[in-house]
Each structure stands twice: as C-alpha cells, then as structure tokens.
Length: 88
Length: 478
Ligand SMILES: Cc1cc2nc3c(=O)[nH]c(=O)nc-3n(C[C@H](O)[C@H](O)[C@H](O)COP(=O)(O)OP(=O)(O)OC[C@H]3O[C@@H](n4cnc5c(N)ncnc54)[C@H](O)[C@@H]3O)c2cc1C
Ligand code: FES
Image 1 (tube, chains in turn purple, orange):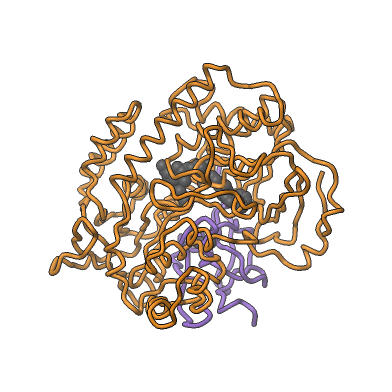
Image 2 (cartoon, rainbow over the protein chains, first blue to last red):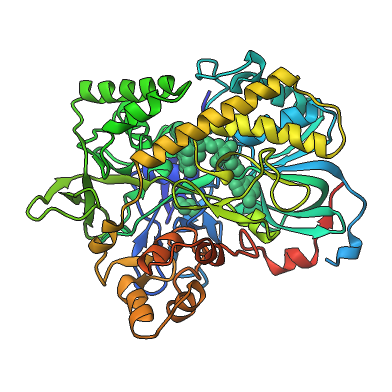
C-alpha cells in the first residue's frame, strides 16, 4: 500500500506518496517549475524525467543541485526553489 | 585514489544498467556461474520500460518461455536474494577505465548521497545503459510543462501523476501512441497527437517481418483505442512553437511536407497545459566511449556502440546490449541481453547456460527485431526541414542558454568547422548535461552528421558530477 507523507516547498506544506520522486510530488501539487536559470532567470522544471538533462535541479535540506526527477521525497524534506547554480 | 590501490578482481562481470537488456544478461551470465554485479541508477530493476511496474506475464514475448521478461525478472530477484547477483540500485557508474586486463568501474550514490562512492574491478563489462528521448529544438521548448515523451510516460507509469489536464503529444514514432494511451488511462485529455511523419507505411513494413505482425497489431490496437477517445492523430504535422509566459499555455502546430517544411497558412493554436514531445531516442554511449570503443551511426542516424554478431565491442571484454547498440525497443533489448550474457560467459571460459537451440532462437529473434527497428526508422525518420523552424532566438542549449543565432554565427562568421570549435565559441553542450540533450541537434544545425562529429560531442569523462572530497576519500568495495 502506498503511504502518505509530507514535505515543504518554499515553506508551504505539501502532501506526497512515499517513494514518489520530488518532481512527481511537486507536479501533483500543481507546481511545474522549481528552478530559475543562471543567465535568463527563467523558470524550469521536469524535462527528460530520467536524470539526463539536469533541468530539474532543486535544493533539498540545504543541498543544492539535486535532480528532482530521480530523488525520492523523504518525510519532512525542506525543498526549495533553486536560483542559478544554487550557491547563495 | 591511485590505481595501485586497486585490489584483485572483485567480480567476473559488471553489468551497467538493469533494464530489459541488463536483467536478461545478468541472469544468463549468472546461470553460467559468473559472479555478476549489476549497477543501476533506478530504485528498482526494469529500466525505462518496466520502471515502477511489477513483473508482468502478459508481455508479448517470443522464444522459449523461461526467457520471457517475466521469468527473467523473477529469476533475477531470486538470484539477487540468494546473493548470486549483487544488484546495486540507486548507484550511478560515473567513470570506467582499463587497468591491466581488467576494468575499473567507479560508482556514486544518488544526488542525496553523492559522497558515497565506490570502485569495482571486473574481468568483463556489459554496457546496457539504454537511451533517452531525442529532441529537436523549437521556439518555446524550454517552457515548464514541455517535457520529453519518455519523461511524461515515466511520470505517469512510475508515480501515477499526470503532467497536465490537457496534454498534447508530439514528435515522431509509435511511442507517441504509447504515451497518449497512458495519459488517457490516467484521466488526462489529449487534444491531439502531432506526428511529423506519415505512419501508414509502418503497418505494411512491420507486417512484412517475421514476428512483426504482433507489433503492427499492437500499433493498430493503439490507433483504434485513440479513435474511441476521439483523439485526432495528425500526420505530417509538427509543433512549431510552445506558447506561454512562465509555463506552456498552448502550442502552435502546422502541416509539414515530406521533408518537414511548413505548408504556408496551415498553422493553428491548440490550448494545453502540457506538451510531451520526442523524436525517437538517443543511445547512452558515454561509458563505452570512455573506453574508446568504436562507434557507428545506427539506422536512425544516431551514434551507437559498434558490436560484432556476439555483441562484443572493439574493446576486448567489453560487451554492449539493448538500446546502446541501436534503438529497437524493449523486445530487442531483452534478446540482446540474453546473447550478451552468453557471450560474456563464453569470453570468461564458463560453460554455456543456453542450449544450442536456445541460442539459435535468440539470434533469430535479434535478427527479427533488427528488421523491425529498420522498418521503424524507415517510417519515422528525422527530416531536415525541422531546422527551418529554428529561429535565431530559439534556445539550442538549455543548460548554457545558448540560442540558435549564436550557433549559426559560430559557423557563418567565426568559421567553426567542427563540433569542438562550435562548442568553444558558443558554450553549447558545455553545461550540466554535457550536451546529451542538444548535441545531436546542434550537430545537425551545423550540417555535420558524422560518426566523428557526433562522437566528439559525446566525450564525457564523468557521467555525472562527483564531489572532489569524495574522490579523494574513495574506498574500495570487495
Ligand atoms: C524515459 C523513457 C521511457 C520509455 N518508456 C517506454 C515505454 O513506456 N514503452 C516502450 O515501448 N518503450 C519505452 N521506452 C523505450 C525504452 O528505452 C526501451 O524500449 C527499453 O527500455 C530498452 O531497454 P534497455 O535495457 O536497453 O535500456 P533501459 O530500459 O533504458 O535500461 C537502462 C538502465 O540503465 C540505467 N543507467 C543508465 N546509465 C547509467 C549509469 N551511468 N549508471 C547506472 N545506471 C545507468 C538506466 O537508469 C536504466 O535503468 C522509454 C524510453 C525512455 C528513455
Ligand atoms: S528532468 Fe532531466 S534530469 Fe531531471
């Protein structure tokens, strides 16, 4: 059976299913983009879906450049939009 | 870590990738008594086709019953459980090199555990790393909500999440029908399937092949299911623009001729909140490339690993199977995996696991699926006209945000004559993805299209970034 869990995205609580990728959980919650590009400051989200394109980079618990399409969401994750290369 | 630190061989065979090809190869090699390690970056075995799905029985599978995917997967699980196969999930092989007559394979944990690294030493290696969707850049393709067909398929199959309520599916190939079918099943509305080629000849071509009838039947099944859902299946049409501010809100489509040039006055706008798009697949050849294995152009014009009839590459002890040797679908991948497993055992001097008859069936099936792949690529090729729809402000390299105008300038004004020069002048292909997404399109926009030019673009010393600290502290596993 799939179990419900929760995480936060930019501070807002969101529901997810255990084992789901961060990308799937965000899209299920209506979020289509979670990164802005380095030069054009443009939004990006899921593109290849299999870890090849690196468009879906996101910051998880303070760690930048995590591929949201490959990484499973874990209970209580603090997931944040990543700006540029993720280093502030 | 210095090479001299590397201990004696830890395993006979390392198999890179646990898709249909890798799973089949692992089982056959293990049946011959080889010590096998399988490395895969996914959470479960099965690769892109079977990801998220439990082993299924109904899969159309030719040949002996004990060699169907369902049986192979069950045996894989048993052999993993009993420790005969060492299966490492959520691990990426990021580099491979030769050391004496052995191979050294370097692994990294997933992005949340990227500091966890390990090395393996093996006497033989099978590369079964599969493929990813091919993209042809067009205005607006970098908008959120535009995603690869494979990515959309996996999102739904793996997580039960649909990318949007109104999802247009576009590109070329029968895979578009599979994606649409999955989206419909999960409650999405598909306003149109936009196919750049004319698929009608696929039926005749595929039916002419022994065993191909089942595939053309599958294709017709999809078509009739879509008709029931009243989804228009547009032939000779392309998405020429994705429209939206911060996400896709609509696509502009147009009729194209046989060469994919837009027919004036036929464009129209379809509202949607997602676009799943792909023009076939590109083989993942990075790891074989690191070892200097010979590459060739596959039937679809993409770079693939060159193999002999036993699936041996030009590097002794290195074998390749599945989409890495040519994009031909999941059945081709499974039977190639069987042969690669048998070949690697033979290379290591182990007794054969397949009977002579079994091996004959496998070889015959490989020939069948090769014929099928040729029919596929003959019906669904990429035509040059796509380049006309690339405007100077169209994004070519998504990572470095390089536009087509800059690539054209490198060729026309700066005199770039090869892949390397274009890359250096523009930075296209120098970002995070190392050119996986854009390099074949940049290559085509520049009019290169050779094994050399595509090969130069596919040189990737590290498959994924690795933290320096982790490299310095690298530990051997044994
Ligand atoms: C996203 C996607 C979805 C697809 N969905 C379908 C579908 O629904 N129906 C269909 O008919 N065809 C589908 N295809 C086509 C499909 O690729 C093939 O039919 C089939 O999966 C090929 O099997 P394979 O074993 O050659 O490769 P794959 O199934 O691709 O398996 C290769 C495996 O290797 C892993 N891998 C790659 N590189 C590394 C590395 N460096 N380190 C560790 N592991 C690595 C991959 O994660 C993957 O698990 C899809 C393709 C893609 C790209
Ligand atoms: S979507 Fe391409 S790497 Fe995650």
